Amino acid sequence: MKLITAVIKPFKLDDVRETLAEIGVQGITVTEVKGFGRQKGHTELYRGAEYVVDFLPKIKLEIAASDDRVDTIIEAITKSANTGKIGDGKIFISKLEEVIRIRTGETGFDAI
Image (cartoon, rainbow, N blue to C red):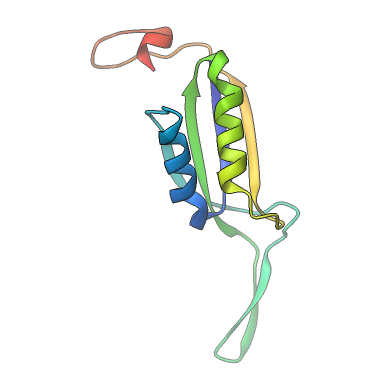
C-alpha cells in the first residue's frame, strides 16, 4: 500500500476530484495549506502599498491506494492538475505500513 500526497493549485481541485472519481478512487483527504517552492511567492499591490506574499495557498490531497493503482492515480492527478505553469505542484509517494478502519477494526487493504 502507498500514501499518495499531492500538492496542487486550489482552482484545480474540482478537476482532479472528478478525474479521480472517474477512475474509481473512493476516498480522498483534502487540506488547505500554504507554501512555496520555486515559485517563491509573489508581490501584490493593496491600496497603493506593495507587499510580498511568501506563502501561496495550495491544496494537499492524500490518497491511500494499493500498489497496483498508484500509477493510474498519479497519471490522473498529473493530467488534471497540469496548467503548464510554475507552481502546478508536486506528488509524493510514501510506503503505507498499516491502515485500520476504526469502526470495524479491518486492517490492511480491506480498511481502504
